[in-house]
Image 1 (cartoon, rainbow, N blue to C red):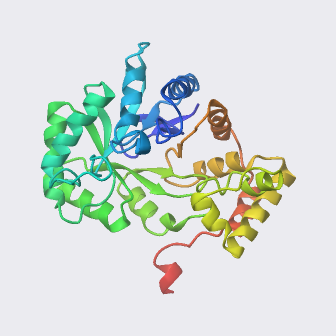
Image 2: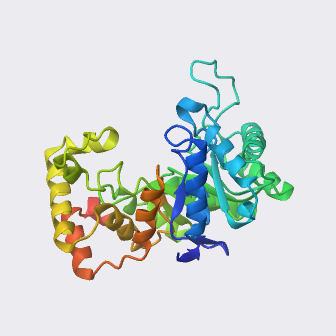
Length: 330
């Protein structure tokens, strides 16, 4: 496994992030533990979760699965850079939503950290991430809450998720004015088929020294060989992948993508990950394996060397938006 610095920090993380959103809803606890064991054996030290993960098994369930794994010994917790998130309401579906039980008020941040620490069975969270922007809470209040938690030793760093470029700037300019470190990472939707982050989010992250952590690197399976599997009689894809394939232009691009990689003898999913690892500012794409085999495929992508010729061909199939503001103003 290769390692790199997380943005401008001194923290070293693996070039892949283990995403855990499937743990609980799609992968049971025993298999989740097996995947985490395999990830650690492969050298992946960056694990990402969120307090709301769990879905039909109950919000918080994913953090609980990580917590029971941490108690298994072998220095697991010390080897892992642990990231979780705060924003969403933790009540069960259909329950009344009490005020101050979601978003980024100082009150909810304090409550949510303590609840996550309990579920994760740890005394600290390495990277505490804001899952979404909160238009009602000023960054002065958010950073005050973060500073308290850092002094208490409950968190070490703060990161963002799904922030637009201007909010990254606002957050870090406020932190700078208050004498704080500010955001150190940004999780964003970024892959070959969805490159809008290149216009402002990635440039803002790079200018402010944030590590970019792309989520959905296969765009919901769209870049993982979906058309070939369909041709082999596999069950038709759903979700984001199905919606994108319903667009004739996108379907043609995916077909061209799969044909190109077939000529090179390369696996589409591994190339999609390897491409992200060539992008400026990208630290570690999030992979969310449901099985150990899917994890093995992701690990192989780290050692995959894409030629300049292949990279140029991928750009032709999935052209990016171009730099901002030139791409829309000139």
